[in-house]
Image 1 (cartoon, rainbow, N blue to C red):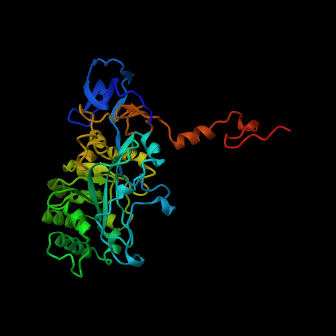
Image 2: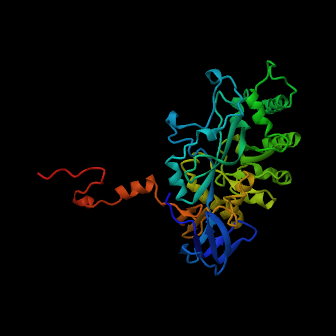
Image 3: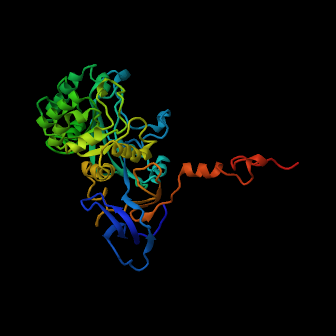
Length: 418
């Protein structure tokens, strides 16, 4: 990142605050010491402040990149660069339950994915723990990281859980067994099963880690799609007073009133339309709009390679808007909703006095694919808008000597003249 001034005044912007103030046209944002100090019109810059004329362009908070493995997975096919799952079971057949597993300890702030993602206006992400054979439906813990090169996560940890058909192989090929296992884990935490019982699954550290998430403690992020499984999840979370959020939720719209009543946010994949398995028979691109109309807080997540394609999440939000979600709710799903859900709203997710000056100036509507991030600031510092991908582009797109005249990219030296 560049060491630009933290005293900054951005003039004449269309400021999408992601707060109850909504959008402010022709507004100024004053930054000092890395923090947003004031929003208004005709603000005076302090001595020495850098002044940017936004010329009416959109200004937003840096966006949430979804639930990813950025910094945990560099090259998917190279095991040494993948750190998001735990599999201690013998021959990958014995289930091991280790909720104390914390993926943030493996986070690499030097990942080349970070600048690639950051220059697209993505300023933070939730590192998620994945499930694997030899692990369990309780994947472990993750947390929010800012993509500013910081080594440590911010905010509270989240516990990741996977249920439904995709996780049946981790629970004896039975969905019912998933609830049996989860109830047993709670019995262990609450002392109804002694730690030294033959059936006990948790280590002492595991009991301590899991205890944080009971009785309204930390947030449990549950990957689940089928409506019937979501109904069971709502009953289980109410019975044990567990605060949950849903990731995926292809059929969540079918139980939207119950989700709204329970105040459960849902992070949908807006491109989920045709069912990819039997848990997603009711998938629809109107999922986000229907959930929001029922009063559910909606965020976004991606299926597939979310880490290497985090930049696409704003396109997904645009797809949700194209299918009925109000625009302001589309932006909120990339900013305020994830910040509120994952316990970092005191610092991130909105443009308001006192918040970190993590900002993006866009060339146009940030939910349109033809718009680009013109400048990203983190803590009020302008970051270098370059990455490994832009360097490769600059290296190979044009050569000093045109290709038709024998020019080669700079990677290849010209042969010596004979």
